[in-house]
Amino acid sequence: MMLKLDSRNYAAASLALESVHINTLFAGAVLKGETSGEVYVDNLQQPRTFYVAHAYGMSLVFGDSGNADFNRSLCDYITNKAGERHSTEWLQADPAGDWTPLIDSIRSMHNSTLKQSANLPEAEDLRRIERNTRVNFTFNREAYVLAKEQWFRHDAEIVRMTAELFSNQDGGVIARFFWRDQEHFLTSGAGFTLLHEGKNASTAFSAYRTENQLEIGIESAAAHRGRHYAFSVCAALIDYCLEHGLEPVWGCRQENEPSYRLAQKLGFRVSLTLPYYRLAQ
Image (cartoon, rainbow, N blue to C red; front, side):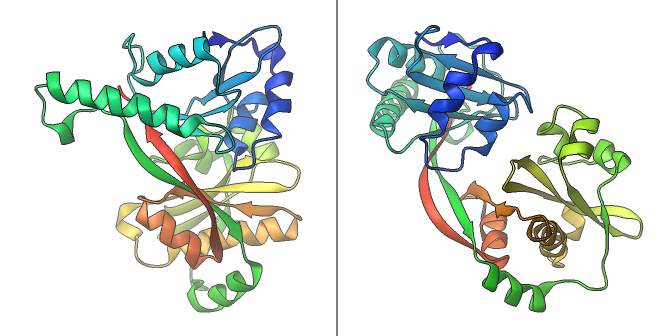
């Protein structure tokens, strides 16, 4: 079964996470108590299988993929059998295990059953499980320097993210979703906002930060897209990373074309792709 792990016992999950060789910063943030989320395991005393769910709607499964009891509960969770999930959740799995065949099998059976019984058009049915692609990138400093010479908007006003900017940021990817509170972000995070006529046009911020890495989150107002504002404000945050000895980190869905293109424009290069599942509601 999937058993909820008390936050006081996250050490075992943190140790197991070290063996997962993909971008796991969001899961690490949950396990360190830097953001909210939940952790499920197969055994409370000696866990070998782990499911970390971030409150923003991202999750990761890793560890022993051969635990039949856990996998039955995982199937119920993924298919939302109890109807407790009311918002989108995106799941990725440790590619070192046999998780992908298992999840694909669950997906196939669930969608097949749903197609036979559902009345809603397939494209509108949020109960379907979709398979997308998650992309991990590595940062190429030389490519970034060359790109910055071409695309950076020197005429733009870029300021360090303040408490007011943190609190008032709007959009789907905003700093409040990734940090405990404003004080936590201001003391441990970093962000920059590009202002157009005094208003927030684009913001790049640290979604997660460790001792040597910083994962970039970016949100631009729709009216200001296509002006290299996102590039410029991300460049400000990347420069901050380089000045502080941090590796800039980028991850996104391959299907999110604006983010996918922007990453490569900034000098990031694709290092890994893996399945990324939108779970049923």
